Length: 194
Picture 1: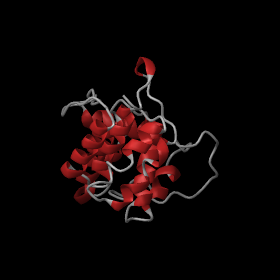
Picture 2 (picture 1 turned 135 degrees about the horizontal axis):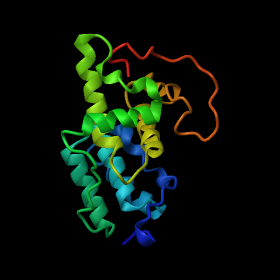
Picture 3 (picture 1 turned 60 degrees about the vertical axis):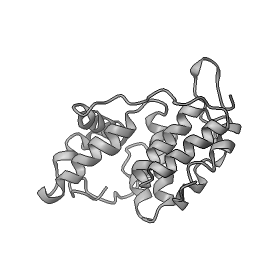
Picture 4 (picture 1 turned 135 degrees about the vertical axis):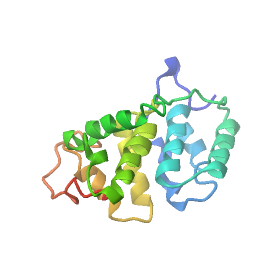
């Protein structure tokens, strides 16, 4: 099997440019980088987690995931891979809120219920789905997932959004060095401006 690692440990190198084609959003965008990513040392589980996270951030679904699975299988990766989910319908919002606090700080503890009533459902959904269903999965840690999210947002069609991830983080989770003071792009209570 290509891309495997001893003892089940997952290596997270550069991934051989695994994120480059995602901005294209084509059916093969999850499949094209798989061979190079595995050859560069990324193991199958975190590579699959990039694909899973792409469903939320890039709106990719069935045909793209099917092509990704075919590419993994072609590279000798035994499927299905072990499940990585850690939440259930009853725990996803709470776990997602904790992930938001871990990434962005204590100001996010009640963010899901703040803001105008007409947009509160969006903040609740972000806590439960984007953070609860995806950021709590095993296979990649919060720093890696935040970097993946940043790359997806940068590759997408909303140029202002990537800045909101590192700017809002008390120390930026994708950098081990302190970040310079920069004004926040939103005030934290403004509803869906995430």
